[in-house]
Amino acid sequence: MGALRIVLTVVFILISIALTVIVLMQEGKSAGLGAISGAADTYWGKNKGRSMEGMLVKITTALVFLFLVIAAVLNIGSI
Image (cartoon, rainbow, N blue to C red; front, side):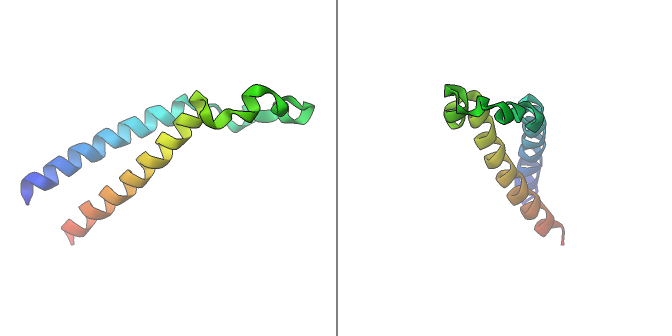
């Protein structure tokens, strides 16, 4: 059981680092202010889910889910 806890802790730390880097790579919400002038109707605006930004959002969501699950598992083991 001790080895599993060590492995989960290492994975937890790696996910934390990856999550920090990916969040910092994303554009801020203020970058989308071009929608006021109609810039959201461009090809980039319509296909944002397939872009690098869309991929970063999906990866962030998956990493946050893993982060929460591993945090809960590590916390249950300490009770």
